[in-house]
Length: 345
Image (cartoon, rainbow, N blue to C red; front, side, top):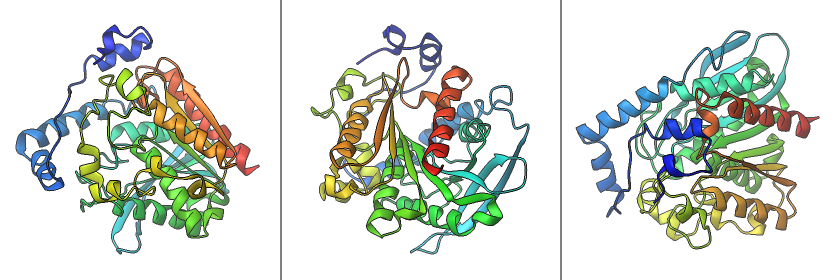
């Protein structure tokens, strides 16, 4: 297990932040029901709320200013369940339709909300690059977001697919060009970015979007994994993954069935052939680094126009910690905006 303070690869600014974070290894758990009971115990809930409170401090106007941006909240009905989902739109001021990013937040498909401060700031950082950002607050598998229902796979995926369809159908009122949409997300949102693309592809609707940008995608689910050396090399740098909790939370049945829409690491070339241009961006010091790289290689084998990106010196999802490394955050936000313009030109 690696102590982030001792890893010479890490940007010292990130190492200083990681050293302040709580956490440690967790044991396996017997069932989803046991996991739900554990995370909803008073002490666990208080710890989670404290973590979210700390992350809200990242919503810093000095790092991610709102000047020149319009921020609005929306709601749509997700299908096939008919549940209500909220969305956060952040876009530059001005009239006319502009390219858009449907962004899916991280949290392992289990926790967090796009209305948390860390995502509000990240939305502003991307939108400052001249694109509209629509963040979808899908149903989580463990702890509620603004969607009160807590459901395993495929609930969150249904909400993300519905979110893409809603943005496309309501593009005029949102100020988004429906012909210039991409999907992006990090960590669990990177999983959902790829899964949403594969679901739209299977449904014959991949034409709704022009590209996918998956950051540090969480696609394998069960660790350690001998196929991915980073799951051992980097375990303990921000993430401790050597347990079965992720698959229990999101749905062990889908993992056992090797469902690629739940865990895209199970995807075959046939599952991804026909996807639009896709970027896989990974972090050097992330336990999830190598599964993202292998998915990139799968895309290449399938003939998908894909490119890989490695952000040196960074931990999992470090781009969102703009207070520590604003230059890294802006670089990745600029890369997303450049990708949107490139694939929609």
